[in-house]
Image (tube, rainbow, N blue to C red; front, top):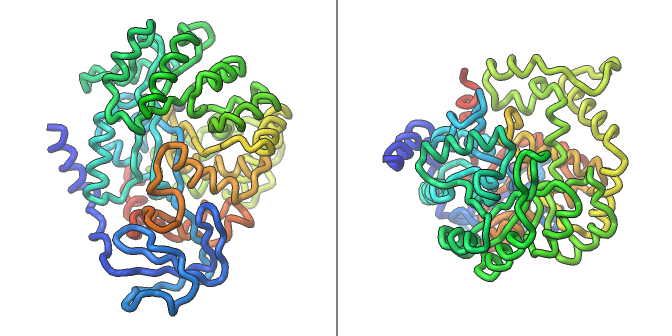
Amino acid sequence: MRITYLWLVVIVLLPALANAQSAFMALQPDRIFSGETLYESGEWLLIKEGHVVGIISTEAELPPGTEKQQLKGKTMIPALIDGHAHLGYQSVNSWGAQNYNDANLLDNLSQYAYYGFSTVFSAGSDPVAFINELRATIELESLPVATPLAAYGVAPKGYGPNNTFLDEIRIVEAKQETNILFGLDQISDIQTLLNAVEPKRDAIIKIWVDDRAGTQPKLAEPLYTELVDQANRTGIKVVAHQQDSDDTVRLVKAGVAGFLHGRFEDELGEGLSRSLAESNTFVIPNLGLSLLRRMTIAEDPLLIETLPPATLSRLGSRVFAETEKTIPASNSNDLIRWQLDQLISNLDASIKRSFGSAIERGVPIILGTDAGALPDHFFGYTGHKELEIFVALGMTPEQAIRAATYAAASRLGLNDRGLLEKGRRADFLLLNSNPLNDIRATQDIHAVFLRGIKLDRQAISRRLTQD
Ligand SMILES: [Zn+2]
């Protein structure tokens, strides 16, 4: 029955992409940043059947009959990946379990696609089988939306996410008659959990190691150590939510794949940075989560493209909490930039120091936003702001883009995307200016291609902004 409903949603809301082109197509922007390498000598991206054939140096080398497009002034980068979000609960209007259904999930995923995202990892708040089914349909039908990945959520029985989110997740569990959260209170729970994980390889488990200021029991070290050990031997990745640096140290030792919150404010110092780099454990800084909530984001032209007027007027009551100083901006774009700049420059010195040390030591940093975990932290939009924060704190634009593309894909076990090279999916953005000069260029999107097909961004925007 759910499938029937899903198909109805698909047919009504998302006219399928035109069939993936079977002929060769080549695009020649001013520059291509593959996710690893920069090409600026007039190279062509050659694609066929939704995949990259190669980056070709000269027009003469293109196969006969190739459809060619020259894109003056444009920069091509791989489509982006959000390595930490929570799909389904946020709609364009409201937040909560009442929104968790196929139609809203597809809305969330088309919002991601609108902002140039190919993929999003929803971390521990979904029925995994349900998301896997949705993903299979999206891929089979080439729907013009981002691909969702989901994780099994693990904590002491009955706990895990913050108490507000926990209540909403329980409602979805009851409605769908399935488990989202799995209790881990004794060693024998581990086998039960691992038996439930499907498919075994490349599946992801998320653990919460957090007592929520004394309101929840914290997952005990011997339990997560054994879980991570057994999971890793089966090819299952374990990623962690943690709160303080002592737990971070223990979790690195246990062998988690990465951390969904950097906790730079907790002084992720030299020693810990070194250990993260040496153990090759990834970190998602997730700094925008607290900063964007203090901004008047309803005035951001970028966000206005995907929200209905009623939501914008509700958000419009927000004031910029940081300062009473006169706002020097002449237009709303400048106003938003100014607010973010203010917040970043007022960040605690320890955060800046930790972030700088992580970059310097080579800690694998990937993009993640926690979008959808709490009300009005919006999908896709927040990822672009996070990239601005990365660069403001000392990453080069190349490093920031890599964190949101190739690095994120590798860490999530996705070897078919995130890099513009032979054989991978032709998921990419065409930007109106050069993000390697100014990372904010990722917000000025000319076009989004997923599986080699150009997205109808205007249609997505029209649909999402309807009241
Ligand atoms: Zn989260």
